Image (cartoon, rainbow, N blue to C red):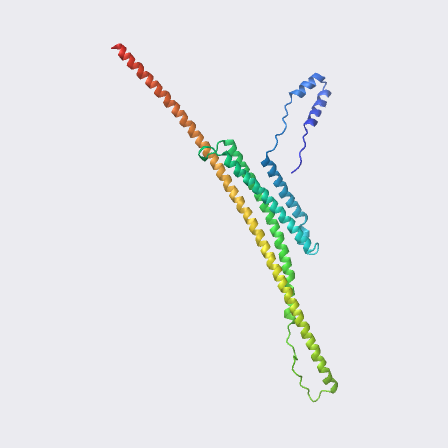
Length: 311
């Protein structure tokens, strides 16, 4: 929210200068300035201050996400630790905003409890309208927070998908490396036409093949470990995304509940107004019937006295 500054004194100075330029003397200028009735703005209630503070927090969260959007999504701009710290800060922001909204809800509930009069009905129509307005304010704040949380879910899903895409190509070398050993540990047959130099080279080939097999197995073990780590990371990311989605769902449900309460408050206000109209009509009927009974008894008494005098 932008900060407002009181410009009353500037306005008075402008009026005073304009009056002097038009030839007004000091007494006329003083009377003109005294004729102005400029009231100071009313001080905001604690609920309004808390609501504006929550709105500022949500806007700061949105600006923080826009500022660090590329740092969080891009693969080469920041490290994973920096991305985790950004995610922790955003989660703390969301939690703080949700706690502030819960405080506003509790204050509305306390005000509703204190404003109930006889038979659980609202004692003041103005107070009922104020409570309905506060429900609407909390509903707007909840919807704004849910919108920002949904954007954060999209960024997190993009990051998780990038991590999964980087982990997936590491599975391909398993298929390429696995090749059947042409020789194994079996002894190669020595044809009669092979020369002695070739016979001495065959054990070297067997040793090289065994080294290749050992390296292949080591690579397979390393790749399987990397695959297990990627799967664990993927599982943790999915769990975190599910938790965040669950929190966003709860926020949306609370927003729907607040909207339902707001509709009920508006309907209750209408019912109270109708009840007041019915009560006023009943009071008018009671007063008219009372007047009619008094008039009837007066006429009857006068008639009895007149008949008694006449007889």
